[in-house]
Amino acid sequence: MSAPTMNNQLASDADRLSAHIYSKRINTSIWHKLVNKESWTNGISVSQRVLTVERNLPDDPDAWTVIGSNSSAANGGSCVPTPTEVQSGSTERSFVLYQKALKSEPICVEDTRNAFESEQQINAAYKNLTDSVDYVWKRHNMSRYYEISEHKVIAAPGLPESSSHFPKTPATCMLSGKVLKRFYQDLIADSAELDGGSLGSAEGRPQLVLSCSAETSDALFAETGTRDAMLYNASRVPELLAPLGVDRALYGFYHTIEKLPRRWNFTAGEWVEVPPYEKVAATNGVKDRISAAYRTAPFEDSIIYIPTVMSLSVPGPIASAGGGTSFGTSSYMGKFIWLNIQHATENPTNSWGFYYCEIKVGAKPIHPEFGFVIRHLRCVDDIGCQDCPSGTDVTSGTLSDLSDSSDVVYGV
Image 1 (cartoon, rainbow, N blue to C red):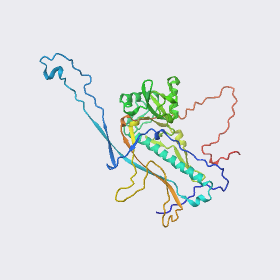
Image 2 (tube, one colour):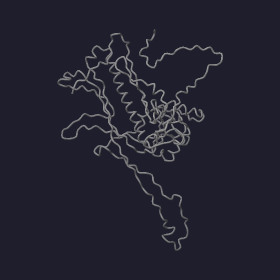
Image 3 (cartoon, rainbow, N blue to C red):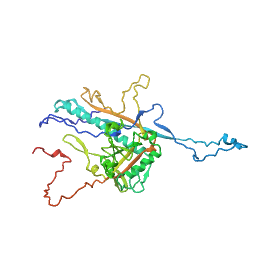
Image 4 (cartoon, one colour):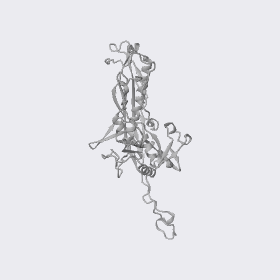
């Protein structure tokens, strides 16, 4: 063990800071609430398999025989009709555990002595750590759903798709009602709603879930106007979806708004993801802000969410492996613990420590055939700009770029 480099991230009051400590939060997501979770089974293997008994129907469902007289009838006649054997089949899919650890920068007790409102600063930093876990979980769940889904579709003529990767062709269409209606019918025909895909019912038909950005949802509703939109009050929204802000449905889908959908560029024939955040310098340390490239990325993913496409398998803690052994316990869900590890030379008086968490999870594929991820066009340049009415006297000015206001002096 060696002592880390100590960089004091706590602000001092040398130039008189205002009395309140503010913090910058991270968006949460429906991907925290809708994905099913279960326990990982210990004692089997590092790679486990899930068995799905497949649907099988008779080969001749429309072949019937007329019941007639049994006089001298061979093979039992009408009393013993010849049966059609219904075959059976099952599919095995494997999945493994993934892990990720997060830690804070080291905090030295001496740095807190003369820092401004050190307790508030550390509480805000701890809250940011928990928000970071939420973001990591969301990205994991979205990415695993993407990987497992067997329908990775491009919104372009012919709707090219692949089960393993997105076709290397750019999207040329925004997400439309016609596309959603087609996939809705495909899912209903495949009995997705009977296998846990429907989270409610309206107008006599099951309602599935569409996870998309607010701009995509608004564009879909703008296609036909509000007359074709079903508007709901809170009592009619399924209990599971009401806390997520769901208040409307269209084309057989409840709309759940993803605040940070995955966005993409298509460069040199390859899909390149554009991360939402970029890291820039702050007064002390660094900060993450929404990047300009993310704001203007031309392609975006919308996801038809079916709960039974996958589930998360989380291992439980192992307190002892026998023989008098003992181990630290963790939920492996990303709960931070404070570690202040004493060491004879590097930390003899327990004067510094850090927050630490571990996440372990496997994504179990259940019905990948129900998974649809649609990569479509964003028309980011269409802002509905109109000329001023004739005869209007307009004075224009230069607008400041306030995307990063760290150098702006307010009130001057």
